Length: 132
Ligand code: THU
Image (tube, rainbow, N blue to C red):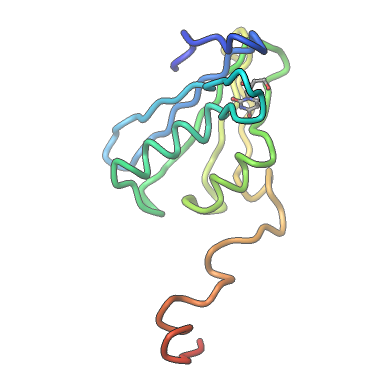
């Protein structure tokens, strides 16, 4: 778990590891910015990296998030939605505390009644008037 980058402003360390079907683990940490809202959470850094490396929906088996607090922190709302785009609702999200104790919940439990890409028309449907 990548935990060496303490945010220089919040001093709150967050590490995120994404397990892919082929056994690869993609890591991320929170990347902060002097303009505070511009900073990015560990989960979105890791997920963006996985997507850029070619990970598709179905390739992602589990996500782990670690912080220095107890009980464990859970992904923020924006990250839950970001993850939702690329993962199945039954995918486990493991949340680790400062003693490596973990709580696990599925994405669907963390983000009930969620909105996802399947709710939108595809480019084909829009361009050719096709409907499902
Ligand atoms: N943070 C994350 O990286 N993931 C979360 O799920 C919650 C918050 C980061 C953002 C910021 O760098 C710091 O933790 C304090 O909010």
